[in-house]
Length: 256
Image (cartoon, rainbow, N blue to C red):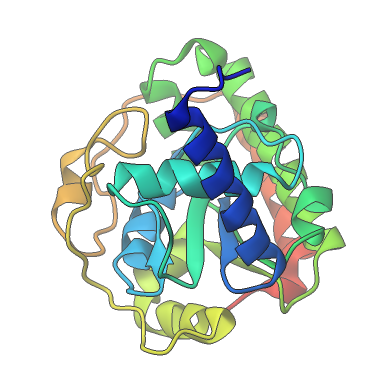
């Protein structure tokens, strides 16, 4: 627990004030729920360039109760050298089970949830290319991917269409204008989302999102680089089955 210094007392008061604003629906939390290499960093940039949305990427905050919404909002605000929000939405993305964010938590406050997935073969190869311990083998990468799809299905089952929507990476890059128009309507934004964006302070920083050159282009670009990793037929089959099941479960929430 933080020591009761003047700085920490101010922090607690500000977090309580932000939570009150969230409770009174003056501001809302927005979450991208996806998996690594799903296009979530691109989506963050497209959203965070809108004047009604504040965010920078993955906060890595552990969610335990709805009071963490205020703590996350405070963390994001401080990254922009601010104390209180003027935007309508505070944006975080969650790509890992251990962060604790569940559909039950997001039901307690007025939140917006965007579910995001990418086709399996490219996703798993790309996840393996990251070289992370938790997904260091084909079996681990497959298990992570399937686990995240299952979580996405849970959100789709528990949240209504006015609170939750679903899209794929392919929707985002191949049908960008119609997808962004649908997202604009879903979020009730006062002006349309654009298919080009300016860099954020977090752009390209490892651990906060995609650090490849493509995210620095300022526009939607489909990844073309071949990933020279072979996957077994069993892995591809299992992943495709999980992906198809997820698409079926989320079909009523699909934006396009």
